[in-house]
Amino acid sequence: MKVRYQYRIYPTLQQVKGLNQLFGCCRVVYNDALAIVRSVPQGEKWPSNAELQKLVITQAKKTAERKWLADVSVVPLQQSVQDLGAAFKNFFESRSGKRKGPKVGFPRFKKKLNQQSARFVRTGFSLKGNKLELAKLGRFKVKWSRPLPSEPSSVTIIRNTAGQYHASFVVEIGPINIEPLRPSIGVDLGIKTFAFLSTGDRVESPGYNRLDRKTRRFQRKLARQVKGSKRREKTRLRIAKLKLKTANIRKDFLHKTTTQLIHENQVVVLEDLAVKNMLGNRKLARAISQQGWGTARTMCEAKANRVNDREVRIISRWEPTSQICSDCGFRWGKVDLSVRSILCVSCGTEHDRDGNAAKNIEKSGLGLTQDSKWTKNGRKTRMSGNPTALSSQPYSEQLGLFA
Image (cartoon, rainbow, N blue to C red):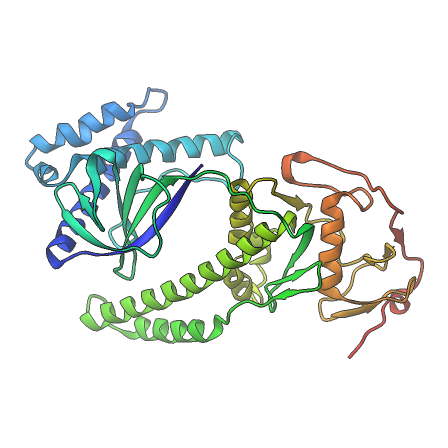
């Protein structure tokens, strides 16, 4: 199984100039190749990757407009053309339905202000002691936060919008063998609290509000400053660093939370949330986007593939997990979001709204509720216990609200 290990690198001033030149060359090669493909008349065959490399690299070096391409290593330039081929492949597979997940758009031209990257395969880099050596760029100081598990097959040099440089290595790892503590767990993702677990535990998210307020304050300052001025660029860099800090806090939290869920439970059950649709609510959009629900699901699924005997099950978003008593199966119907505690009129059990939903999510994923549906693999299960009953009581008599 291939995974990425990312480390911070610290280039010298001379190496920064070389990297910036390399990023520019990779961007030009990518954009030139995309322009050639877009110029092909409809119905005619597109050039292959090998033909594009010959046009935008080999032949371009001989022209006065692109002769500076010879100043950098040819390896990342070739990889840029291959990246374009992969982008087109993802686009067509997404249109045909072969590729699952969100729809992939048509490849777009790369911009100078976005995150920049250049990929080296084995012929373009080597590890010399504790340093990384890149073709035509020299040796780089690397902050080794953890050892590499195996020999890397490629490395991608990344410069983010905050001006920091990272090296991302692709390595091969074997499956992980860890005995689970529990057979299954249901997870109900929330806004104020990141997740409620069917075990009764809560996972609180780190606070993003302070950094968010600070970021918005600098964004207002940026809007008042003159475009092209040094002060505006200084403010833009400050905003980029604040956003990067927020993203790093969120990423670290999600990695630790999902790792614990996968390591401790054999089956993890989540809801198939329509995050894009939920972002249409202007009052909750910021809070929802800060939580990173989609990233958490992706991390869980990826880590389940690395650990033996682990599975992530995704239930339908239409499962009435908040409308059913997790103890007796009595269905009380829709409940307003302001109601946080519910008393079941059938069995008399008092439920926390989200804790009850987490238990129902787990049961639905295990096929223990009536007409349970999974979105993963299109599977559908039937209940093995008592059917959930629809309420015959008036709405006001179904709920017991607690202060």
